[in-house]
Length: 459
Image 1: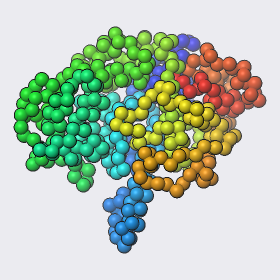
Image 2: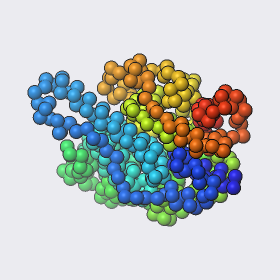
Image 3: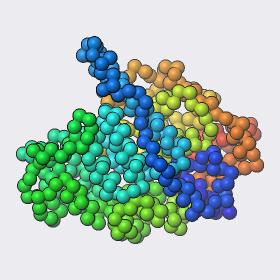
């Protein structure tokens, strides 16, 4: 029983965002197979979007504005919509029953890293990633590669015959598919020629601009022909290096940063032979006995988003000012839709430095109203993307997201249960007596103090 409970907790964190408040009562009685089926459940796909009208819809109202005013208003609308998208994606991670889809989408969101100001482009790319998260990697790669967000971010709109731009071709190979060492500079040049003419129109529709495409013969990864961008992607998918690169990255994210090459080779072969079936790969990982080895449990530092979503899943809360959760993303160093660069977010120890660790340990107390937020987000043009915000953490609205937690419900659910068993992945290093000695014997304070331990930072 204890062993299956430990495995179930491990699976919920790796294939989702931790234990939900509704899962606590029967978690000990579920088999791994049942839980995998629940996690992989796919209902009708619902897009993540925003409610505020876009710039085009308010153009008439803006027609009388001065150019500087108009620009400012457009920036305000863009920022508002991107913030809505961000929070609606976070809400899916917390509340969706399709936990594996959202966790996989979170992984691809960092893998296919893109950062553009246009919220419509961001929405398109985010939903491409969510829709294909557990589908076929070929479909996902093609749709991402033809999305205006990615074509814009990697400068392919400027990639034209006689003036090729190599940025898109390089990143597609280096970061999205094969990884370094599996292609040459000549392959990048020839690949860039094949992608000439790939772009998008004002409405955000993919366009192959034939008049800008280089029709000449190209030699790419040992093959010669009059290749198009689609041909190049297909040739990349024929390379076993692509399957190895993607599988290794998935292993590092979902299993362990210290890789087991024999396991990765086996998984990679299966992934390649399945025609890049992502659902099949993930099912194989989570159904394997080695996934539940002690060395793979409680060894990963939660990313800021995983930390926040995990707290929100197990504490039933009403958040009056959810927009302030974006401040916590900024402060902790992971803001959805704004990866630091095309490589995405680094993982592991890179999440922890002296300031972020202190805040991570204090979030449960701040959100429970026991401590004020004493950190202010630095004005970071990298994150604000040129849109300087007058808001600072000194504003009272930023001090507190106004969270109300239903502690009565938690008291009832955790009655006769050891809360540390549900909150901590690896309790071996936990000094539970010290935690309880600070907890006035109440479930509320025990849970807040458990969430404020270094052990809670691991999953």
